[in-house]
Image (cartoon, rainbow, N blue to C red; front, side):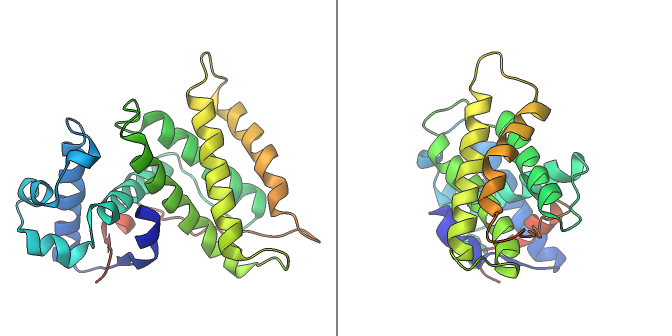
Length: 214
């Protein structure tokens, strides 16, 4: 679903394309405030964005691709608002991503709807996987593929953040981040220290310009 199309997202600087994609992402977000994702049709999204159905498919292969880019836009904006920056080191990159995931999961719209969760989860995990994959490909381990490493880490980070969010009387996010990093951090370790340079959008606008194809 969303993860399957993540690699097809292509950034564009054309202002007209960016405006259309922003309108589509905003339209989907608005619809999700009152409807379940499964009940939302491409036609409804297009009408809410004031574009035709053909225009939708000019930018996204399906609504799952749109959902992933919408999540990526919001996630990138959240990271920018938190001042998350990476210096290329494993510790800072990993901690920044974990912090971002915890913040996003705790504030994501629709998170309280259990029937909405599978689609939102798939989109968040796909976004995190894409970020991590940039780094794991640059610094591959000999015993596991970059794709498997990025996939495993993205699921582990999201799962831990979700467990933290749904825990009654949960600990502060700062403590949760330290605990999650302590759990997933060793997964980076191979024969020696492995650096991870996570390519994270510095601004939400970088995801707004992304579609399933250009």
